[in-house]
Length: 299
Ligand code: RIB
Image (cartoon, rainbow, N blue to C red; front, side):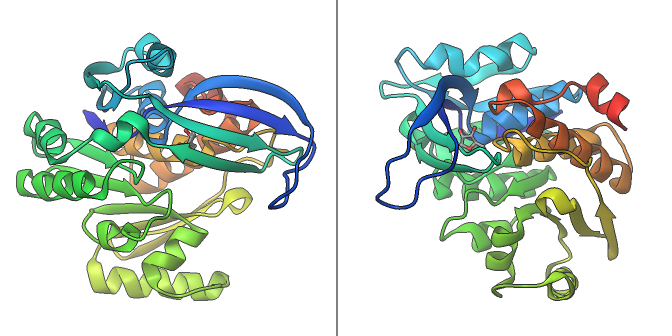
């Protein structure tokens, strides 16, 4: 059983031929909305991967609340711990350029109302061996409390230290498993502009210091990791990305589901990397998350 304690957003998405520079206006090509939020995306990915998933979070009292939850609900995610608070639902303003890259500004809304109380409630129902998954789009105090409570119960914690915040390194060190992209990993390691060799050395050094499982996603280059002292590498698929929004979340959700389903570490990593690649082939975060069957075919 996986519990995701995290953000739920409505994504407002414009596509442009190229992303604007600071102060520049560019013409948009299309506009759409889609359910998103790092927490919700990861929950849906884990659910589509075949795990039982409970989402703990909050939406607002507005027209975005129901559409933000619709795909989670359709997939059979447990939403009984999603609060409806008198504030706006979280929103993300997303620009996707012609090369599939993106720029995102997130307004927390209801996600910002989550506190230590919801963290304690989220973990209280969990048992040793369950998986708690966290990101950094909800208040740091709530994330920290969830990590502390989970450790006391023997719950396995997975944190994706995204988006990068000033608390990322500190909170990352409190989890059993850390998933970071290159930039986030540099923050964790306290070292900038790492090349591949330096990254591997930093991975080993951090593992020796903390004993944590560390996973670094590298976009088209796949993923590297260290787990129980053994270094791993996994590749996704060779693709031409259309929209990379939510690809990292898809990786995280599939990876957690792999652990939940008892896959060995290397298999869980590879399946998650392939799922992340497939998520780049369709627009929108949640609509693009592949089903377990699609991932199995691609493997
Ligand atoms: O990781 C992608 C997500 O980041 C989007 O769905 C958006 O909501 C932002 O939170």
